[in-house]
Image (cartoon, helix red, strand yellow):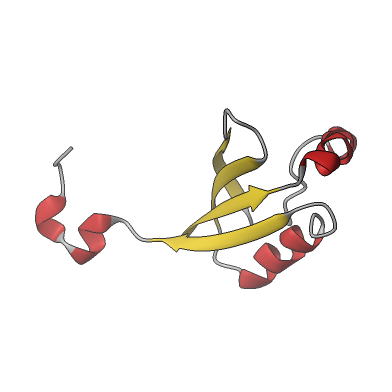
Length: 91
C-alpha cells in the first residue's frame, strides 16, 4: 500500500535534522519500506515522502527515529482508479 509522510519542523531544528540525515545517510527507513520519492517545500520547514509498505509497524519504527525533531503525519494513498475505474487513462 502507498503512503505519504508529511513532515514539518521548526526553524531551530533545521541544523539537527540535516546532521542526523547525513549521519544516517538518508531518511532511516525501517525494513519493509520502499521509498518512492521525496520532495521538500521550496519555502522550507516541510517535506513530503511517498513510500510503499504492507507493514504498519515499519511505519511506526521509522517515525520514532525523527519524533524528537519534527512532526510527522502519515496519510494512506489510494489510486483513484481503484474507486472510479472509469478514471483510468485520464490525465
